[in-house]
Length: 230
Length: 230
DNA sequence: AACCGCTTGTGAACGCCTGAACAAAGTCGC
DNA sequence: GCGACTTTGTTCAGGCGTTCACAAGCGGTT
Ligand SMILES: NC(=O)c1ccc[n+]([C@@H]2O[C@H](COP(=O)([O-])OP(=O)(O)OC[C@H]3O[C@@H](n4cnc5c(N)ncnc54)[C@H](O)[C@@H]3O)[C@@H](O)[C@H]2O)c1
Ligand SMILES: NC(=O)c1ccc[n+]([C@@H]2O[C@H](COP(=O)([O-])OP(=O)(O)OC[C@H]3O[C@@H](n4cnc5c(N)ncnc54)[C@H](O)[C@@H]3O)[C@@H](O)[C@H]2O)c1
Image 1 (cartoon, rainbow over the protein chains, first blue to last red):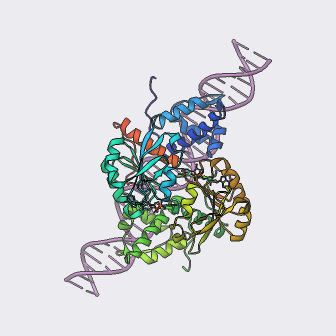
Image 2: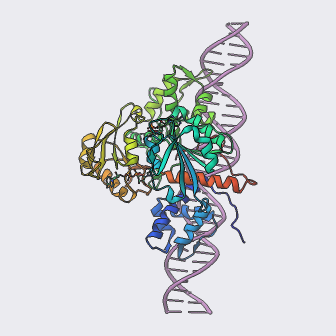
């Protein structure tokens, strides 16, 4: 068997694989050579059996009776999630949230590099943020073509998010991360993921109310502690 | 039937109800009096049948042949998600991301109010952010007790997130929104939701690679456009 | 060389959620 | 007043994801 079988990996599993990869990076820095599924699952906040099932999508990666090689599993996960190559991202809307993202070092270390920051506000254009100069949004198309950026991040106000999205897609971007509180519509073949912080708070408020209001019939609580992002 | 039956609402549905509520707020501002499930679903980026199923957890809210009353449904959703009362939130770690959150007006309009901003950095403590003064983190316990805050938001570096979380829980906070890239462990009865932006990017990168690499056998693509948060 | 304990990998059952089809119900037009 | 059309609410089936439990495999030990 020269090549790993191209089994389909569920999206929920992909998200967890990214978490495992981060935990493994920390273990590697700590000098650990091996980990068991139990320890890794605990650090990632998931069920050990689920973790093993997730990893099984990549084919056998561990040694029975011993565990997983930290470096080996890290390399395998890196490859599965898209390889070593760094991915170019453009960020549109350099306000408070956009500035925080542009200035964050945690993305570069995982292979994501911002290659362009765009805004309409003349007071913002020209400023340096995270080592880049903010450019006028008119340069969007040229910038995407030039840098071959594959990921677009939208942190503009909600009312212009769809327009920005359309321009990104027309320019060739096929993956979009959206922070604006609107549902973007995109053609088939383009992936959108939405981060909605108000919804997160609202869900917490609901769970809180439910906990107080209906203790007799307890709701089906997830066993472990993490709320999935999905 | 004087009171609506206390049926159990799935967490995925709760998250979507929050989205519907936001869309309805926009429609109400626009002066609309009625909406159909199709229109509402389109604006929220979900399937119309799914939307009706979600709403059915609250009991009948619409009029057949006509649709839903915008104001009526908005009130019903507001009540189901935790009522009108504003919820007090404390924010720990007023760095780049924390400042952006503290300064964001979109939370207050949905009933979430920051009542305390905490940080350790002497250069940050004392500054005004979003109308509040940043306080030293030593005041955490007193502040929670005083304000009866129910939600804690963590935007500190990852290595101190668990410590901060423990202090929040000990002080009485039972709902936590975590932005640090670690899995927090909490006692039963405390809810944690995690926002992991690196994972979002990594999933997009994976989908991108999968699209290019294996076009013969297409992956099971979600019909509509939005990636759920979960 | 064989045994024993430990850990992985996987098969199957269960429950949740999603998507579609159908029946009930109310309104508008005549 | 009655019929037809529109839209909701619900029921059903299918898929996906999660969990448990167990067999298979490997290292270390005697
Ligand atoms: N804490 C937060 O900041 C927060 C939380 C949740 C959601 N959001 C959402 O994220 C988005 C950004 O939030 P923010 O707080 O950073 O807002 P902001 O107003 O600080 O920043 C928005 C930026 O977008 C720029 N902009 C406006 N129109 C543009 C266009 N057509 N093209 C390019 N840039 C344009 C503005 O000049 C501004 O710099 C909003 O949609 C908001 O609802 C923010
Ligand atoms: N774009 C982003 O900024 C971004 C993106 C993804 C994830 N995150 C995560 O969010 C968190 C915050 O990111 P950031 O960019 O704002 O970092 P930051 O360094 O700008 O801010 C962190 C803040 O926490 C404060 N702090 C440190 N220890 C503390 C303690 N014990 N108690 C209270 N406050 C303390 C620091 O003084 C600082 O002000 C990090 O965990 C980061 O990994 C940030």
